[in-house]
Image (cartoon, rainbow, N blue to C red; front, side):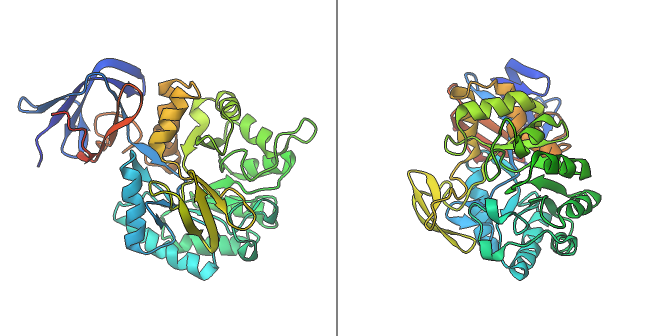
Length: 380
């Protein structure tokens, strides 16, 4: 076993606030409360220490997607770890039901091995009016029997299903998911305000990438955005890449919902951490130019090329959000939603030693997962 480490001198963001000249003790794979005398002291003065990032909505990266083989899935996982995401949920996109069932089996095995934290099914149970980068020919109404078949195929590793809850079977499917401990997320929806309220009352708890792929806020027809923002039972996903949301919209959502009800996500596709070019998202072709992914046919935004280290830096330096609130949105809140906050999401004794070291400008300097450096800061 590697010697215990004491990362000393950084600004450490804890659940209770930021400690200046703080320290985090790593003993094996866990954070410890006390350090042995022979512990290695690592000087991290001038830096920030924050919990490892938790991404609950991610389709791939490094040129690979979560619709691929096990090796391709692991390539995507490793890519995002290099950018601070130490806990990741594998998101699928709309596809043939037989394929999704088979992929659920593969992804569940990787979840059992600890490579991913679970599975998020985004589609096929979404609105053709708000399909975004999903194949309209493969969309289906959320029949509870089909939803049940999909979560059964995930063998207890399904974490979230995104649905257009106004479609036939939508409310019944929300109830089914809630009964099975799976997050029902409202997204890719054409719902009214009233229909959204009904879905929340039925058990929906997450807004899939708020503002995107849903009717916009109106003063006479407030639509889903108002219902999702005002209800304390809902956590709203936000994509902070400068493309999906105007900074004012992001700040409006963040401040209205409050730091405890926001989860920063990437909604990343294959090109994240890889570069511009032509890609495939499900059955659809995507062109990535200057970091923005759009469908070749139609031009809709097709996920993002975002990594969570960039989202963190942008949230603080561009959006002007407090560091502690960003940590909540990028680590603690998604960890709670996924039911893994007892292990990850904050820097507390007994939890996995998952942490990110940032420089004074909030650029990524080091990443540790379960006590081992994924990105070694080379500080001595």
